[in-house]
Length: 281
Image 1 (cartoon, rainbow, N blue to C red):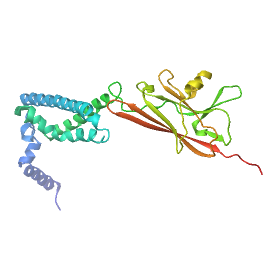
Image 2 (cartoon, rainbow, N blue to C red):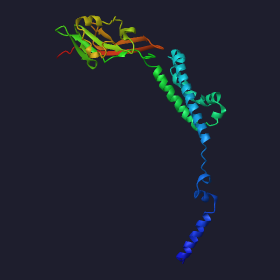
Image 3 (cartoon, rainbow, N blue to C red):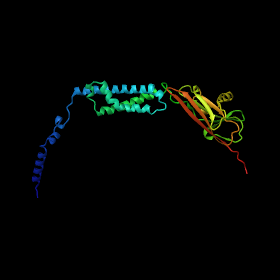
Image 4 (cartoon, one colour):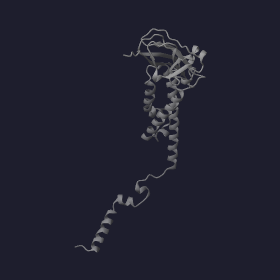
């Protein structure tokens, strides 16, 4: 048996023995003995200056990259659009070399792996922001005119006015008569009427044209259901050819626009059905 006094004396001796090592003494002390580097205000200021120079260098580098890709590479890269993002992304590996080539050695000596990590993200986001600005209106036009507010069909009723049917229900019955038009409108960040439009019926050589002026002369509100910007859009009313056989048909509108910096194209498909006449037994 060990009495309590003997046990307490042994524990005190063990604590004293542990406290004799250098590591244990450091735990009980503060300052340099604990491995904390002494604060050097001069070195701190120099590091902040170096980081500031790095920030502005990366912003300038990313902005220059965005301008080069937009005005030099982009006009000839329509068939190889991947290079427009691949080259700027690859440029992050040039950042250390650019720093060493432009900045003084006194500044570069403060840079670490953390510096290149932060510089990489700053480069990517700066390049993306400027590129987004330069590839959208009013600095560029890289998208062909698009359909304004859906499409459908209008048909002349008994009162001589036009009835509208949405695109999901475009059906005519074989032997149909009267005037029927597939209607839609194109809008763009520039004048949509400046683009070239080619209308055709798939697998057919029937001539098709935009008859909007004829429709407008009868009822200028006939296309209100497919227009959101009637002051700037380009409306279409394409007459369905007479005497089409029963079956599925697709009307195609090919749009070609001389955009900036390249030519923009779009093909719009309008599907409709001519149903067979149901014969009662």
